[in-house]
Image (tube, rainbow, N blue to C red; front, side, top):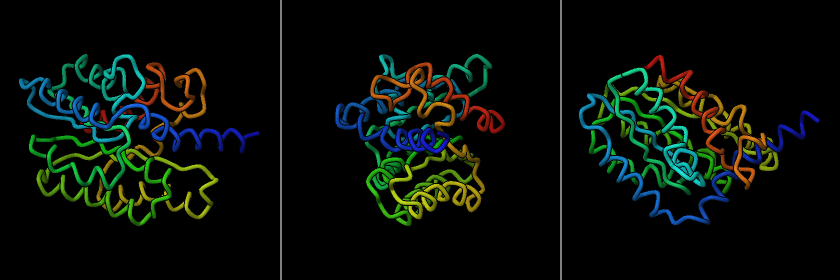
Length: 227
């Protein structure tokens, strides 16, 4: 029973992007990212950038600000911390796509960088070494532009049907990169949400606003110490 539940949870994790991306053109999220950047509070002295796929973008939610970056923004605002939050999520994004568009986002100063990519790579069976290479390149570009930036890497997993060898190697990418680059790590972003019907939308994949609050807490536990 435990194994069945785990399999379902991991399947939901990697399937989450596939369902969403086919329903909403990527341009919609790109526009949201641009808008989010433009509307960010310029009076704040520091910037927290969330860079990811549909989980970050808030796919399927009535209000994208209910996605976990928005929940964290509310926490930051309530604590009156001197940070503005920019949501640069893009549904359907792969690590290769992220590596291609990160330079544009680095035109603005970034103090804290939250990296949430990789699920689409796993879903498509992209070689783990490619995922690792792209994530490392993104980290390198961010550090090269802003040497003092604080980075949080959000870990993901793939289902067992991808094969034990692939699944294990994919899972290990995140803690390995975090250790190599001395970044903070959230081991599994969807801990406590994946496979829980009440916390997911009708597709059984994307978190509801309620589920996003749990995801936000998973991130906040690590992020709060960096702020």
